[in-house]
Image 1 (cartoon, one colour):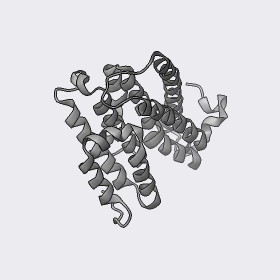
Image 2 (cartoon, rainbow, N blue to C red; image 1 turned 135 degrees about the vertical axis):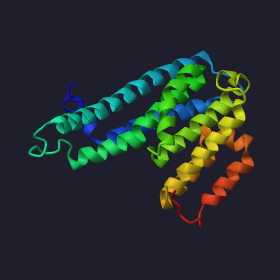
Image 3 (cartoon, one colour; image 1 turned 45 degrees about the vertical axis):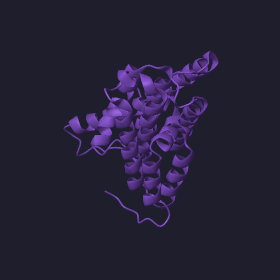
Image 4 (cartoon, rainbow, N blue to C red; image 1 turned 135 degrees about the horizontal axis):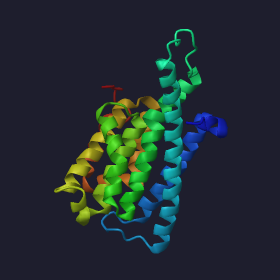
Amino acid sequence: MRDPIAEAPHLHDANYYRLAYQLSAQRLNTVAGVLPHDDRLTTSDEVVELLREWLAEAIAFSAEVTGVLRWHAQLEGEWRKSRLRRLRKYPLTAKDQRLRQFLSTTVAPCAELVVAGSYVFTGEPGLVWEWSAPVRERARRGQLSYRAHYDLACLDSSIAGVLTGALDDYDDDPQPSYLASSLASLRRSFELSTGRRRQELIGWAKDDPSLRPVRDLVPDEFAGLVEEFGYGARDRRR
């Protein structure tokens, strides 16, 4: 595998990933804000066409992130296999290691969830599952950042809201289970964040279009969660 960073130096800059991910997430929220949460795929042809353009870019960005992570893994793997590794310098710099941690726990899963969320709105449940299942497994293993848990909450809220009557493609009794999953992920996101970051998350959650189904369909549970972790609540990590 060729070094992707040598060919594209911006891939070594964490700010590139922050900005690229934020753009993808904002685009998805634009679509989520357009669609009424109790209708199934009422998007106009123009919105669908635009969404598919954005989806292609989101998939390309996810592939970029995956390529960098694979390159880091290859470098480390070759070093570990070397009989002379004790005499060779570890191939990843401190900056590389910080970037890998950021990509693996936040950017990569969030990028995959943006793609999955886009497929919710195009009505392709098989692809929603294909892109979200690996992230769900990482969540079960405790390998996600607070931001990735937040995005997982947004995905499950969108599933519960957009395909209300057509969710048989996802589950036998889908809406309650996806609402509960969304609330559980939102709770985990609040637990893993602290101080100002937690309050920012709570502020986002109150207005995020992707979380509108949770706010509208289980308002008491959502309000209780916000109250539990709002200003004055003691930081907790589990």
